[in-house]
Image (tube, rainbow, N blue to C red):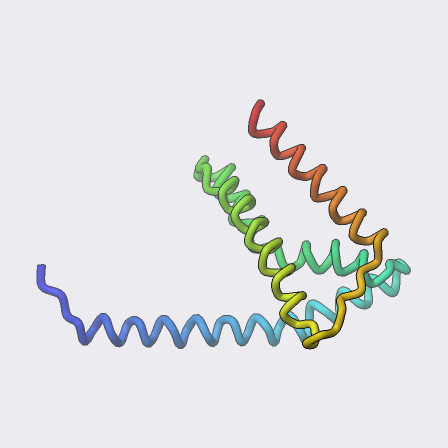
Length: 137
């Protein structure tokens, strides 16, 4: 089978441009539509900003992943859903922690509220325990 290197080169450029435009449009839509809507919900129900960010923002950001997982589990009966959830959770934990440290100013200490850290670690531990129970059953 004969390959055309020139065609492959243009395909890579087109895919790169398409991906960059996709990321850009998603950031615009999130910044102009999702975040203000979440602020309205949080204000209406008197939810603190940290709780709203941990729940509503996480749900909004994970909706496409959740939909793909549900389709893979219930429509195609594939095990792709579990790998998607576990892999993205590991990635999110590592990147968010590293990004927070990187975003802090040089030499400035990060101040953490002990209650929030304990709450987040406790819920993360519960979710890992539930995942273990679900996988071992």
